Image 1 (cartoon, rainbow, N blue to C red):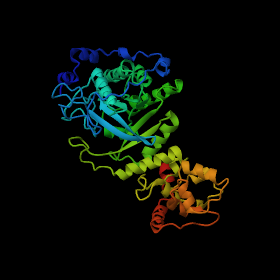
Image 2: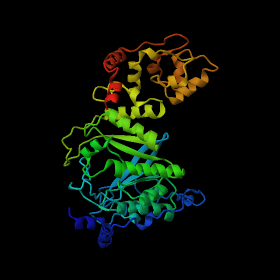
Image 3: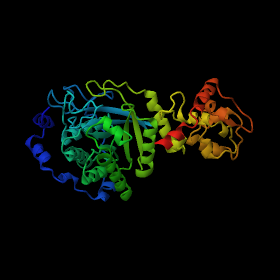
Image 4: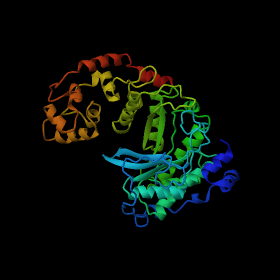
Length: 441
């Protein structure tokens, strides 16, 4: 696809061609605004009331039906995204997850929208996208927006369109709800600042744990300067102005495409948590896309993705360090046992714990006990003796999992199941693997 075709699809014509070539320091909409206006609840606008004007159903997928009544005007136009349903804080949240454009100059080896791949392309203007979102919001089909984009030759051009869309929603439509905005790799400081000012959450995907691994996923993305430096800027902005991006910044990794280990991924993730206050990391099991350079690579097991999320929770909420987790000789988490159980089976000298006296930080090491149930145990045992598994179940403990690792009043309520004994035998072979791998890297 040549430059003229791309500009035609983007719908910007000669004006955008001039902007791409001019190399301006920053588009006009990136002029930083007074933060107080955006954060003050008296001036940050209220949500519009719900409306039944838009008549789609809650299962609608936005994307490939040209006749769909979502502001699509011609047969070659479509909205590159869909309604994404996720769980947050114990409730279902519906987001319009969409690209401003799927035209992209980058040629990432795993991506369905890579520059050289023959796929339909489109561009949705800020006006059209904001209007479409509000139709869906008023119909109660979506609660928030997750807006990303392909990357054009002048990075700030598409970052400007993202910002303009958010500006229209915040100011014209008085939308006060959740907006998640993507920061493009290589965006200018002014672009990053304005994006952070408008968003509840921002994200910039590292995709890989090290520069070496990223070079195997993309020939154009630059790990340290274009991505990690921007993540540092975001952290600095939110430290200096605590009301910005209250849901924090996040990132995502592609898992299993280029030989990275779980140890690589978790070491990088842990460092991001400690050094730039990353809110959380997401792990996406690699799935090959036809007509891409990595389409011959086998998909990564979803169980591996699940184990990474479990290990990530141990780092964030259970007081574990990366060096304490069990890895095999390739630096991979065991698939046969969740990371917490794997740690417990590798450390029989730590168990069983006497439930009546064990401190909360040690209770968190017991399989089947989480932060909330550990807190409940600590509160209840001050006045009541916990003597049977039914009491633990009522406190939210997965009692059957926890029982082999506990003493209740000096009595062991259960022994290890045969399957867990077999896992313990397997894990014994790895007893020093995590430490040795950590020292060698």
